[in-house]
Structure formats: C-alpha cells, structure tokens
Length: 113
Length: 112
Image (cartoon, rainbow over all chains, first blue to last red; front, side):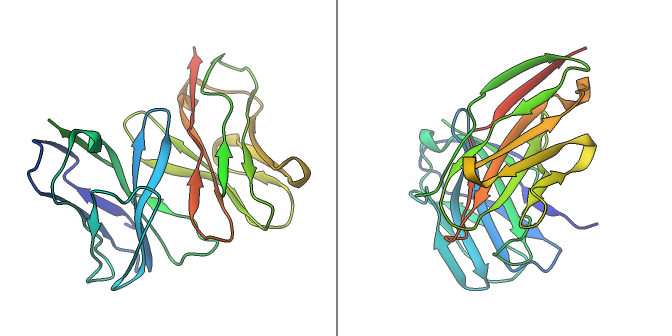
C-alpha cells in the first residue's frame, strides 16, 4: 500500500532534549517536506527536499534540521526543543515538485514541556 | 508574496444544507490550486485539484470547486452536506515559487 509513515505519532518531551521524528515513503517520490499545523495558522512548511542530499528551508525553519540521505526517508530533527515547537507535524511527499499532489503522513503530535 | 485566505473559520450547517467555502489567493501568475480535507484525528487528504482546463473541477465525495481567475478565487462547494463531512478544509496554492501555501483552514461542523 502506497503511504507516508511517521514515527512516533505522539511524543511528550522536555525543553532541550534532542529528538527526531522519522518520515518514510514507499512511493519512490523525489519531493518530501515537513509542515507544522497550529490552530488558526493552518499548515506552514518547515523544510523540503527535492531529492537525495538536496534540502532547503521552508517558511518556518528556525529550530529544526533535516537530512535526506536516502530517497525514502526524511527525518525531522529538533536539536534543542522549546515549548513553542509544541505542534502537530506532518510529513508529505510527491513524485516531483511542480504540479503534483502531495501525500501526507498521519501526523506527529509533539508536546514540549 | 503568495498568500491564501479562507474567510470562514468556522461553519455550522444542518444535514442536506448546501456548502460553499471561500478561498482567495494573491498571486498573478499561473497557479495550481488544491482543496484538502482533514477528518478528526486523521491526516490531510486531497479532495480535488485544478491545474488547467475546465475551471469547474469535480472531486471526491460530491465536492466541486470553481476557479475564477478574475476574482483570484477557488471556492469549494457541495450541494448537500452529510454529517460525515464534518472536518477541517484547507485551500492551498502553488505558484512560481513551487511552494505549496496553505490557508488557515475552515472547520465545518454538520449537525444531524
């Protein structure tokens, strides 16, 4: 089954404790991205990747890192999480960048205390 | 800069009522337009999309949207809503920057 998976689905952590949220897709998609969803703000793009070893900042990249060592995986790293990073995070992928539908993962709900 | 406005933040309807959710964008060039739906506790799913051609686009579950270029709008419609349509709806636009910009969402509650 074609899908985007994220782990963990729920995470409670404390300020400053490094964490990684994994994202994997099995559709051989080139383009992957991370969004955060906050009430009243919709979805905002954090980082995106157009292919292996090619990543770029989205609209709200501060406090986040990503890597794309393999085509299928695009982990989101919070080196030193802060409470303002409490949010719902979605990973998405598409075959290519231009004019393609993005497929979303199930989301990761993060609470930073 | 590209932006997307969804003017209705919350909409409450009774079953069988007609639905229209507004979406306006600010970008003068060629755009790709999307409507996504997020059911409670689930991830975003594509409802419909417009790339080119017929400006009236039909999607899944009886939804449709009309692209009106002169008004920079892409409103979502459904003639008769059901309780199962209760969800949050997001309009999204992709322009020349190739970034997908989302609106802030409209929460639809359908009362049985």
